[in-house]
Length: 201
Ligand SMILES: Nc1ncnc2c1ncn2[C@@H]1O[C@H](COP(=O)(O)OP(=O)(O)OP(=O)(O)O)[C@@H](O)[C@H]1O
Image (cartoon, rainbow, N blue to C red):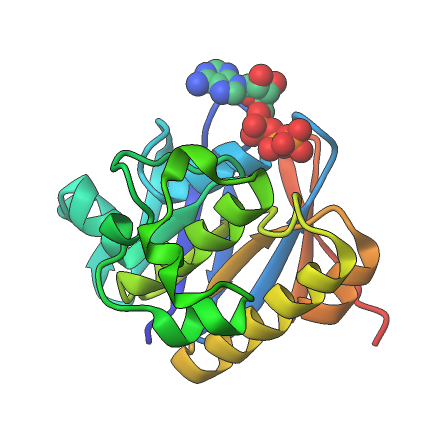
């Protein structure tokens, strides 16, 4: 995998954001509600307006059609959108083993999207994202709707996948303990800047 590089990014909330995320590195992003965490992820995914330069290895965001960029730099929003009737139609490859790891039966692919709970949607949106073999992950509060046991399961699975596939990752998290468990680095939004915080490891 390649390095995700954000240079001099600005939008109407943030100024001069510089961030380089190495393959396999998890940068946890925190900050007050409304400080612009989700919008930073959306800018990096090229769905929100911004200035500055973003690249994945030698590929520049501005030189690539948005849909192609987003296949590589995969955003998993806090509230996922679903467009087909059943779960399996959204996957780009069979994900049976992963479904099992995250506590779903194989028949979950046949489930109607309309019957999913918010926690099921959240886990299935992560599985869907990985089914597209991305090259970088932007995770917006990926365990926000999950109980403690399921959070542990999802964290362990994500950490394992990140280590195996060497994705560079930005992971929006509010919970201090979770940040300690999953982060390689912790960055906080303070005003219009990103500030590096120490991890007490
Ligand atoms: N499309 C948009 N255009 C302009 N402003 C927006 C847009 N979408 C969101 N905002 C505003 O931008 C600010 C930052 O929103 P964002 O969703 O990035 O916050 P956040 O840090 O992720 O917050 P939270 O922790 O509550 O999810 C908010 O004040 C929000 O109302």
